[in-house]
Image (cartoon, rainbow, N blue to C red; front, top):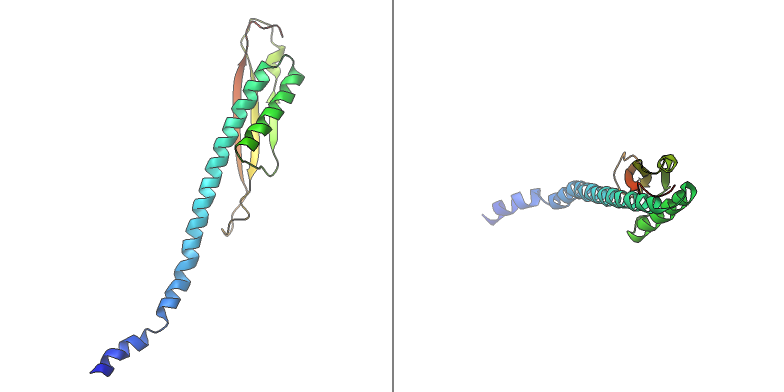
Length: 145
């Protein structure tokens, strides 16, 4: 009777290792996808904040060239402070509002583009992800431009 009970156990020998071999890659893929989602979300929020910070700094400047310089410095500093390292930071500063006469509503817009590092994640077929955000800030209506 004891031999009959042992037969089914011997037939299943090694099946646990096989189950682990099947499940582990799937679990690792799920973890990598969660890491990707976190990385994209965090970077998108940081880029949005940096664009708003850069637009605010540019709107306080007195000249368009000073506005561009302030926007670049402030945007880069904001991303650095938040621990974001873009692969190739792109920043476009629209200073056309500085050419409007005093007394008219004018704004400065800053668009930041930040390619996100994703190639280090073990996800097959993953493509580049880019976080882009535009921040706008008003220029003082009655300030001389």
